[in-house]
Length: 234
Length: 223
Image (cartoon, rainbow over all chains, first blue to last red; front, side):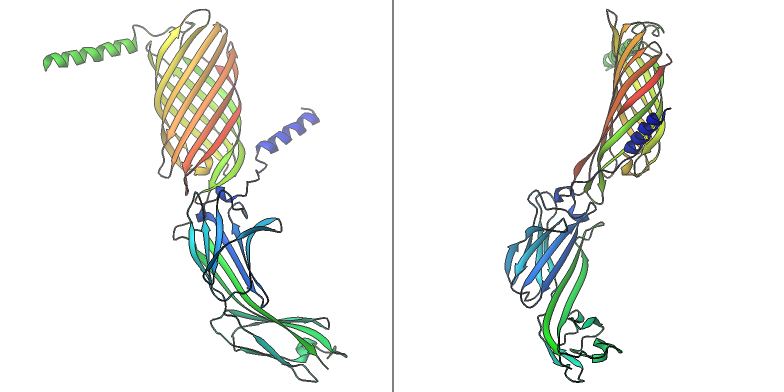
C-alpha cells in the first residue's frame, strides 16, 4: 500500500474508532436524577447574589424546553435569570441582602421537578476592629455563632502579604499580631498602611435530590461576608 | 364431535401437505429459495446512549463481523434460516460480539419469468450479547422476524434484500433492532450495503435512544 493510501486508511480508522461526539449541552437531554445543582450565595453586606449551575454527565447544561429555576427568599418567589460564566450557563438572582435560608425550585416540563430545596444561609453579622496602632495587635470581634458555619478571616493590603485564618471554633474574636502581618525582618511599615479585613461565614451542604440511585445531587455554599477598612499606624 | 375431529385432522394434514410440497426444491432451479453464504461486514455506528438514569449522550464507533448464513428448504414451501456472526464492536464499551439466530422459514412466493424471484418469510429467535453494547455485556435471547426478496434477472446475476426485526424486551426497557441488507452479486460473489437501527426505549424519563449502523458487506454464495 502506498504512503498516501496508508495515511487515508489510518485517518479512516481513527474516524471510525470514535473521534468523540460533542453533546448538545441542554437540560432536555438530561434526567433530573443525573443533575448536580451547584448553588452559591453571597451576601457581602452591600448586596447579595444567588447563582446556580446545572451540572450533568455531559457538563454544565442550559435550561431548555421550558425548564426553569426559582428561588424563594423572604417569602418572595423569583425566577432565576440566565447568564454566562466562563462560557458556561449560570442562573442568577440579584438581591439587597440574604436575610436567612431560602428555597430553590427546579421546574421541568418533561421530567421530575425539584421543589423546596432548603439552602442554609449563615445569619447576618457585623465585625469590628481595634488596635494596629503603635505595637498593638489587630483585634477583631463579631457575634459568635457556633452553628453559623465555617469562619474565615482574611487581611490584605499593599504593605503585607495576604493573611488568611480559618477558624476551627467560632469564638467571636481573633487577635492577629503585627509580626504575623509583617514577619521579621520586614517589621511594621514605616508609614500608615491601609488594610482590608474580611470576615466570612460559610455553610456548605451536599444532599441527594431523590432517594433513588442515581438520585441527583445538590451542593450549596452560602456565605455572609463583611469587609472593613483598617489603617495600620506604626 | 367425531366429525369435527376428522375435519380438523384433515385440515392439519392438508396444511402440512401444502407446506412440505411434493418434493424438495432442486438446486439450480432459478427460483430456488435456498441461500448459503459467508460474508464480512463492516459498519460505522452513531447514535445516542443512555448515561446515568436517563441522560442522552451521543456516541460513535465501528463494528466488523464475519457472518455465515444458511437458508435451506427441505420442503417446497417450508425450511429454516440460520445465521451466525462473530466480530468486534469498537466503542468505549468495545467488545467481542457473537450472535446466533435461527428461524423457521416459509416461502409464500416464488416465480419464473423475465426476472425469477422468491420471497421468504421467517420467525424464530436468537441469542447473543446485548445490542447496542452500551446496554451491557450480558447475554440475551430475543424473538426474530425476517423477510427476504431474491431477484435473479439472469442465472449468473442475483439481487437479494433481507430485513430482520428483533423485538427484544429486557427487564429495564424495550429494545428493537431493524436490520436491512441490499446486495447484488455476480456468480458466486456479492457486494452490498447493510444498515441497522437499534432502538432502546428506557430510562427516567423514558426516552428513545437510537443507534444507526451502516456499512458495506461482501460475501460468497455457497449455494
